[in-house]
Amino acid sequence: MQSMSAPTLQLDIESFLAPLRGAGPLTVAVMVSSVDGRATIAGRVGELTGEADQRVLLGAREAAAAVIVGASTVAAEGYDRLLDDEARARRQAHGMTSEPELVSVSRSGPPPAALMADLRERHPDALLVCEGGPRLLGAMISERLIDQLVLGIAPLLVGDDSQKRLLELEQPLGVELELLDLARSDDHLFLRYGIAR
Image (cartoon, rainbow, N blue to C red; front, side):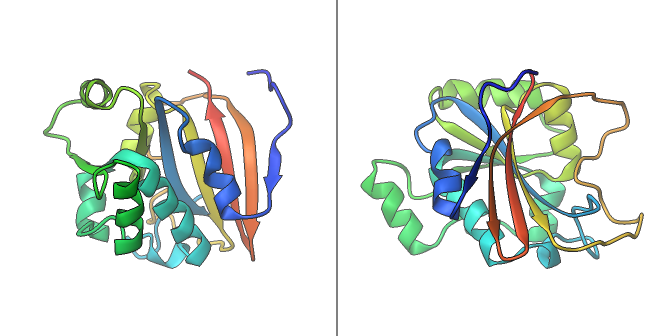
């Protein structure tokens, strides 16, 4: 993949997220990992996240028509409510539903390609956000269903091979990424990549 322009260092999270709003039909994965690529600590993502990471995640959700999440991630992390009252009010003021549609993906359900075709039919010009987990992200990227990856890097080295990696997939991928934007908040780094299709 040949880069069209140099990536921009954004000075705040709002500027970093701005290209996702009103970008038309775009499917973006939003994930966090440690510096050594682990997506969980003790089976959950909680210890990897910080205040800035939550702003990125919630900002992407606020702009999305739908949030796609693996069923095991929903069970492990809890998805009772996607947005707070202020974000819900902002969405409604822009003519959107109070929350994005939550789509839980299981192994027994439709395959990712069929699910995404259905979602894109219902939301033809909207932002769709995939929050993983690692197995769903692997399937979505291997089937070329993701346009961009927003990756938060937590300032931790986890080790522990029992913890999930950012992307869980048995076959090789070889997918090229193009760095579009980056932002920093304290010791957390945020990268937005375009994904070759």
